[in-house]
Image 1 (cartoon, rainbow, N blue to C red):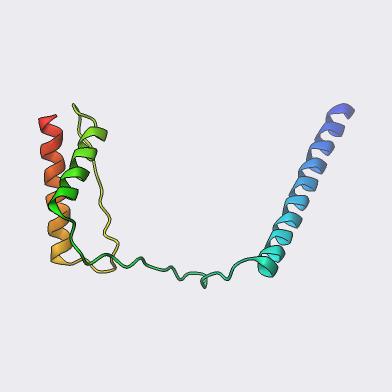
Image 2 (spheres, one colour):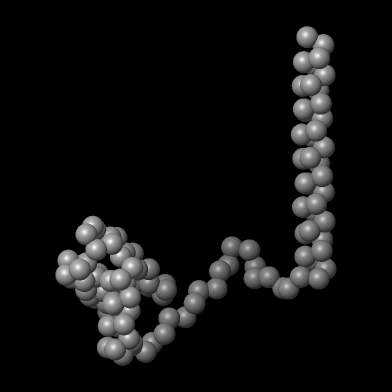
Length: 111
């Protein structure tokens, strides 16, 4: 029984030492980041990418659809989610998503 207690004591001592070393390293990394790191964006504030206002030419849409048709499974269903990069959803964006989803459905069925 005495050997088991020594083993348990060593286990918890080792875990405590590892925890303290990792905690120390975390603060060292934060200090180095503040001294030499790049300026960061304020926490909680994310920069939202500005969507392109130009439409893709039909040739590029066909190329994208062809590439997706090759990647997606041919005999099964595939779920493709397209997230709009803009903040607000407009009717044009909803129509574009519906058109892409419809084209994918047709491409999958014809494969």
